[in-house]
Amino acid sequence: LDKLLVDDIGEMTITNDGATILQQLEVEHPAAKVLVELADLQDQEVGDGTTSVVIIAAELLRRANELVRNKIHPTIIMSGYRMAMKEAIKYLKANLLIPTTETDRDFLMNAARTSMSSKIIGGNADFFA
Image (cartoon, rainbow, N blue to C red):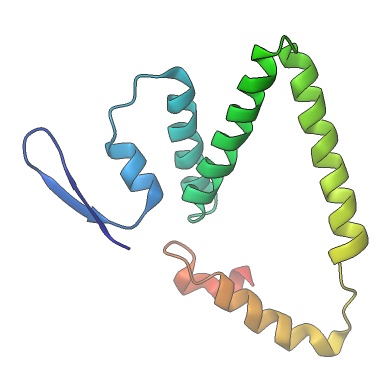
């Protein structure tokens, strides 16, 4: 869905891009600034997924804040997040990784081209696939 943004002087921007929306905000809170920077970095590196990255990061911050309020030290929280990341990767490799043969290559290339038809990669989908 497109969003219409109007700034203080009445200038309008219509977009459905999460990074563009976040860049238009005048953010003061330090954690919110980190989320805006995270979205910008995601947009620069991948060109898509900014909204998803911000939602996931915001939830991790919200949960971490609850733990800090319960007197758990931030380094312990970070250790827990790192451990969870390692376990998630281990789970993905063990349960969701599907071995492929050379005959599956054409199918996988088409799937990769389709999924990479984002705003930045679009014209170069064959190369990146």
